[in-house]
Image 1 (cartoon, rainbow, N blue to C red):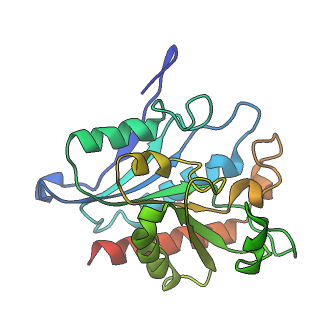
Image 2 (image 1 turned 90 degrees about the vertical axis):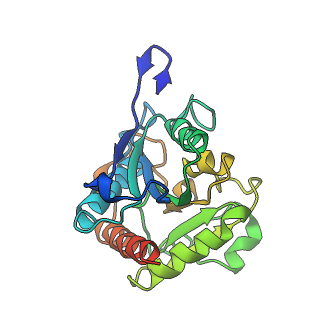
Image 3 (image 1 turned 180 degrees about the vertical axis):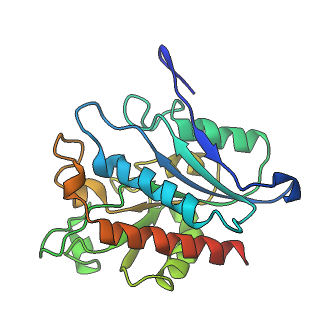
Length: 239
């Protein structure tokens, strides 16, 4: 991935024994960006997402779904953010050029910050607190309107595997934050994609700050995000 004077890389993991995979096997892609803004250590953004990706690799290593791809993307943060220079954009573009079939993409973007305090959760639109919790004790799955069927499929499978509450939101890009990560790149090429997130700056007061450090995270609930996703991935791949 060219980036100014530096060459960055997407790191792609696929199941072993690719010779046993049909050439037209559709891919199920799970990704997380591994860069952070310069002023932040990035424990939640996006160390938590990368840790989740690595744990998914461990949980799914035995009898891994043949079309599974686990991808660590770089860069995602500014100045590459929401441009053709994003690692995920170049990866998705390559899939489109190769006419690769994609079942869907799951983006892990900040999955480690939770709070049970009343009023700890905010939203991009004032009326949304009528329909969604006011406490940041859930994981969110969000995406575009085009990705509604994919979001429903993933969230329903996830809910069967964990007691961690999950909320979904699909809407237009005018909802601030709904496309603020690597799933944006896949949407650009017409692939179903969603973001799994603790909602970033709508909950985490340490977003993009020096205070985004490991001891602010909730590892018990972050683990539930990952185990729920691992089970969901197996359910979806078996259909």
